[in-house]
Amino acid sequence: MTMASSNESPLKTALSQLRRAVEQLGLSENDWNTLSTPRRLMEVAVPLRRDNGHVEMYKGYRVQYSTTRGPAKGGIRFHQDIDLDETIALAMLMTWKCALTNLPYGGAKGGVAVDPKTLSLAENERLTRRYTSEILPIIGPERDIPAPDVGTDERNMAWIMDTYSVNAGYSVPGVVTGKPIVLGGSLGRTSATGDGVAISVREALKLRGIDPTKATVAIQGFGKVGYWAAVALEKQGLKVVAVSDVNGGVTGYKNVAEVKAHLDKTGSVVGTPGTSPLTNTELLHLAVDVLVPAALADSITEASAPGIQAKIVVEGANAPTTPQGDAIMNDKGILVVPDILANSGGVIVSYFEWVQDKQKYFWSAAEVIENLNEIMMRATKEVAEVASSRGVTWREAANMISVERVAQAHRLRGLYP
Image (cartoon, rainbow, N blue to C red):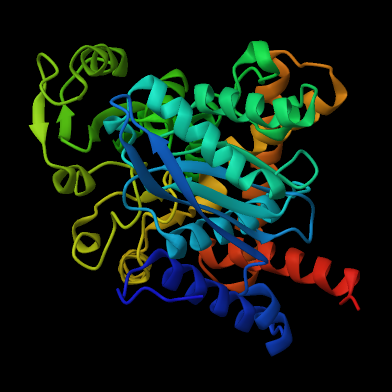
């Protein structure tokens, strides 16, 4: 396993957090060796015939970090900057996320190093199907269940499910989650991660004694997580005062529906009528009750953390905070709800989808949100209790709970042969 040279690589961050949890739990060096090593790494060449007949090669990855507690589970990302180190880090985070919420899964992640915006619909389909064919030997409803992530959506999941099913000779809806409803998808899956972020915000506000109906929120990122979190928070009575995307942010709108309408029309939140512009850094530094970083990794760094004025930071994105940024926020007394808790709504409802596919019995939207709420509230309560009793941060508490569960499962299963 190669290490990225940057001080702020997601893998370096994930390993340093794991090392801290191992030390705090008093685990052995044997435990560290087992927990810090991914089980299976797959790097594949993904050839794509472009619409003009030209063939291009892309790198694809699938990492199964752990299968100790059940089949591997994790998203597939189409993004030009992904590499093996980042994929390992995200697969490790999925392992802890599933353990923290007590889902019967290990952790995985995968993707193709491609900018999906450069692909036609037909090219995207060919790339998705070829990538699926390459990783076919190691995925399956009892082995490893992919889901959508950055740059992929339910359409990609439909192509993956079809490619797998054609090779199996019968329909296997449980091979992926985040599928279209008509192919065995679950109600509530599209908004699940954002709904989970909103539940985390609500519970954190309660613990800090802040009235949610008077609370203000700023959200960095207005994609699948940020948008649905904003919708859910507005429904709870919070005021979402600023949102942003990769191009910049806006404030001064009446509701998020206005911003979404402009985004759908122009491709960006910037320039929404009647709003004032903000940079992404200015958004991070607004005087709000809650800040939700819901974009890509490494938003809150040594440089941006000192200006944060929010009382609570709820991590909608994966690994949005560097260790230096984390230390600064802890010194400032900011309550940070870590990514493996805050954005676990997606994998929780993915679990519900997998269960429904296996049982061939589907739930109502109300049942999905009720069960999501129950699991997230239980996990939040456990994290808050460990943080309080052990005198650690919520991130450390979440890592300790999840790492202990995986380590215990390793010990009980033993080492074969």
